Image 1 (tube, rainbow, N blue to C red):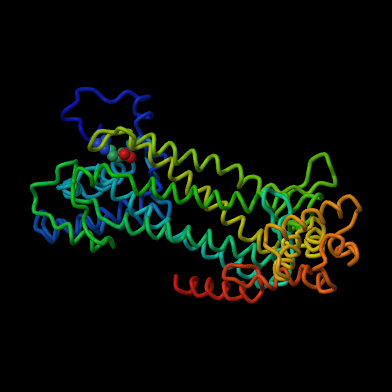
Image 2: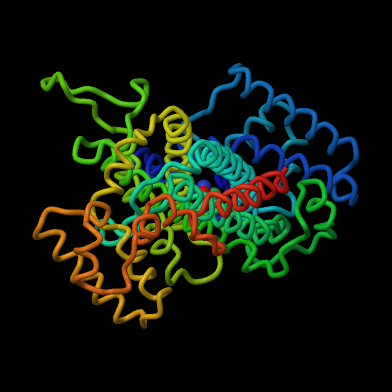
Length: 459
Ligand code: ARG
């Protein structure tokens, strides 16, 4: 019989019960539910709303239930409406009337709001850890590649020379911002909704500071309507997760391209690639493609959360039960993506020779040729135009800026001298870009230090 059997004359229709039930997916919050109930029962005892003895009996039995669930001695009853009702009825089954006192000055509305916050707080920490690990691997790869010259691209056209280290360090900035975004969301979700009860608080003399302290929150939420109906923190989290996925999709896309024979800048480790069932020569970048694909799914989760919450009148509405599957799906997928991407990145071989060869073709030192003329006194626009004409000449005559003879250079400007060759060397083009943020090895080394300090500051 349902908890509300007093008010009802009939049992719930079987299919309606299945439709209504959330236990199949909210059972993963069993630990948070029990932790929340332990704090609540402790507070009820301390405030003399139930006796100390009853409080103790409830707390001890809840601990046993937790243990039994963990060891598999107790199984979830999938007929239950949700994890909250399941645990409460299990408690009552075990300790009778005392168990029935647990729900004093509480509602499932503040209970679910609490459980979800506790669960999110735990998960934010895991994602931050994974991001930290990822940044660590990016830094290690950067440290091996300060001198590895490659073309930098805009519009996917070879643009200017950079180094592989400079490239990896760009991603450390993105993932660092992701960590900061999570920290930010974490701060905001650190308020305790327990005590908001159904929507209008309670007439019992509860101590919300005590439960906040017991559960590790900064303090109680300050409006009971908001306390039970706020899911901003879930949306913020899903949004931060979507941005992480977007960053992962960008590096994934590059790895897919770089692994192709057209680029051949890298070779994936066999453990992180797949073959084809028909084409024996194939080595497919399935991981990075799946990460790219899962972006759609995680953004979809964010959208469904936003749309679920849109226009909901205060306070709790059952629509909000839909929040869990969306955020759990986003979380599970982001974790899987990070957990797979990190070791893949760690084991990838970068083919430096091909990167250098690509950098040598494509006139990526043309800006340096223009800068050379500027340093000899020409205004930049004039130098830019002359260099453009030189590039066109080279294309027509199958030459590069390195193989163009000095006499040929001088046909375009008398300012050219022998020193044009070292001035346009790729190494020099990289080494001279020392301004903060640039690819010069000494500059990138300083950035690596900053990121390493940042990682240490997170401990
Ligand atoms: N299973 C519900 C949810 O996830 C718990 C809260 C139910 N509250 C209620 N008044 N029906 O949202």
